[in-house]
Image (cartoon, rainbow, N blue to C red):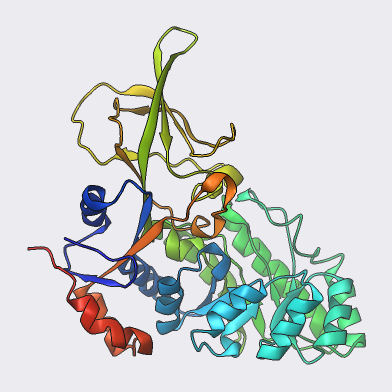
Length: 419
């Protein structure tokens, strides 16, 4: 099998990322690379629509802005959450209409607001008096969403940086917005990345209702509820969230003219990307008990694809591509490619005694990985090999696949298929 990182690879229905990685491990010149499985993303989209049909997802572009991911989501009717001018440009370049975007950044530089105005992206969030005055000066006709916050246990809590107190601050900000003649259309919140309290959704939906009622008393009728992100990349956990969110929405927002949206990122892409790193160096040492310990050095980094590990304390356990059978497992540490001593990917994990130039494969690497690559210490962004099976390819055709891809279809269909 041969695969291209320049175009979409249409493959037989039985080909999965492991097949791609095994094939590339033979032909790849030992550079780290990703396999992106669009079939996984399609499954996630359909599952979301099945479990939470009332909630329109606005994908968080900052999570992973891969071009095929954005195109696929746009084709399936998923909208977009942007928080920078560059993200806006990427989404708008796909011919996505401005009314399919929420500018969910509560603290925007003036130039960001000016860029939104120029491109007709009028739905945006705020959580402070300063933001309201900036918007009044630059984009007074914008549709505003007030972001509230509450203490929630998560891998990365967002409440300190973003959001106002729903009872102490929100009513004051609503009054200021009314006095400025601004149009506040809704309430948003975010339970945090890697939320560990699913019940927080219900609590915050209830608080959002309080803010809605406060606005109504001031003569402002809002019509939008944004329940943010924080959804796991594990598809099976979505039902647990739906079982909390759906009843809460029906209880506090039964009115069907209230539009409900969300900002999932990790949910759609985490499990779709698999990263393969090559072991370019090996060193052994003795621990305090004089037991041999193995240090493996791979060609990626916490300044690259493993930035999410350093920021959110996630643990990604690799698997070697070689089948070592039931061999003895050794105490191992995996280091990144830079000269920085904090560039440690795994600490004291059990691995077989690996060979030089072995491939280590990391699953669930689609969220907050590709956007994190820097030029520090010569790190290169790995190539991405994107696959879609024949069944889903035909489904995409029925959904009016992107015009530029139609021109590439014949070339892509000529990619060597597995026997």
